[in-house]
Image (cartoon, rainbow, N blue to C red; front, side, top):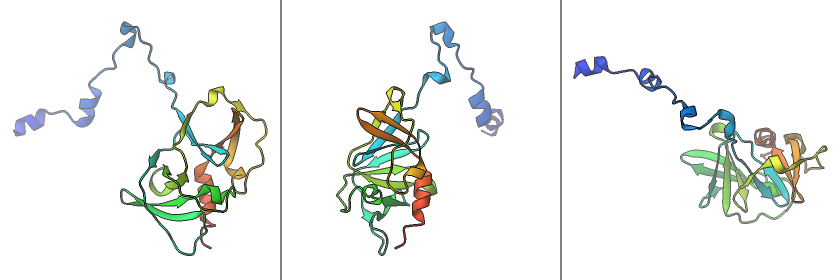
Length: 179
């Protein structure tokens, strides 16, 4: 048995011993630029927000939010996702599109680790192809706190969609969580 261990390849050697097949022989031209990562977006009332393509996301249907006393109404509390406590926000209240908390069936978790946030949403995110959308030369007036976190705005089918820098937005909002 010890002789077999001596002749075994290291994991790096085992993975690197294969050569990439010549796809030209098969009539295939596979290059890295052929694959475009899909974009996703979600709506908060009439505001469309595009998720950064590099952000990891998931949607939860059955979840329990544990409220934190003496916090802003838009900060709903914490949710336990695989042993990690993630803050949950109601963006419709935070952005001032409504005053009344509503029941949301979906929880969108954006990012991983300490930058994870949960956002209550009505519908699951939509796949968005921004290549066909019209980029606006001027970003429209936005609710307080959102304008600093949007670099690009698009219009598509009479809807406005915003490139949403969620990391910057929620970092600024964390300072306002305590009442």
